[in-house]
Length: 416
Image (cartoon, rainbow, N blue to C red; front, side, top):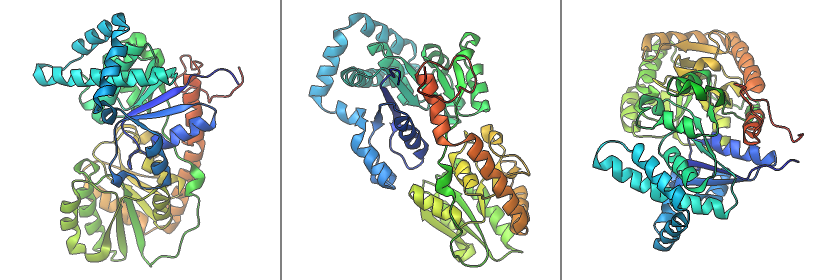
């Protein structure tokens, strides 16, 4: 096997209940022979430890902010940075240039730089050859400064939509210019990365999907109560459009009283949603966060998956639902069209349109044959294009510096 760089993966919160795709990617890269150190800015609360995989990840991840609370660690990181004054000066200049206006913006950069010093010392001591960051937000700021301090190349995965709302705040142009390569999860995300960068850097912007293990969702339907069962999986926050979903569900249920909806996840909109759903009695179940196996079991016990978000990147939960051979109803936003084909594996509806959503819920509820046909097509799509092992292998090709200018890198193999 050719020499491969030791990798570090960084993100703001790891492991996280809503970011299981990162854990899957790391696991798949390790299976390919890559050594991967996981790093996180913050340590997750217990609510994110939803299964044994997350418990294991917690025990082996380096937490930057927690490390910085130790004065000795902070002092040693500063001494290490001072030992390379040229890099430190360049990193200081980069931090200054990319700071947001005002005192708060400057102070934030001071913290980012201190965190980068801690991480740079850690990565050098561990012999890391490449740093990759998921998302283009604060942790990517730290990754960029860490690279400047250490000389270790970095890359990042652009998900959206949050980073794309404020491209200047998150310095997408600067990050893309300085990155060894940029990974985008969809054609839409890649187009936005191109829009917010110099055309000279477009050849290093690639598409690698997040992914799932399709066989994890290939399980027999369990016994369940009669009726048609809908399920949602995700954060219970306003951006997910769940207030619209409950309105549409109530409308569809007026003529289909056997409909049932399960909401898997938690978030700051839960109390409002519970009040909104109260008139529907037991027709709506709030199940909280579930493990990866718990989500797979819930999908197997469902008939329809629904995702009414106002904004998304390319939702991994849609891949999970399709892998479980469940038809989906989702909003036509961002990169969703890369995964869901209207009328083939599900229905696409305008975001915020409760009438259209209710009509599609009713149509699928009334047609079991259509549900089965859509589910079968969706499963084929996920197996062909969203298997995490293949997508991680595409990441491996980029880490091995074999990606070239291909928009979709070929999967990595250990042959030279």
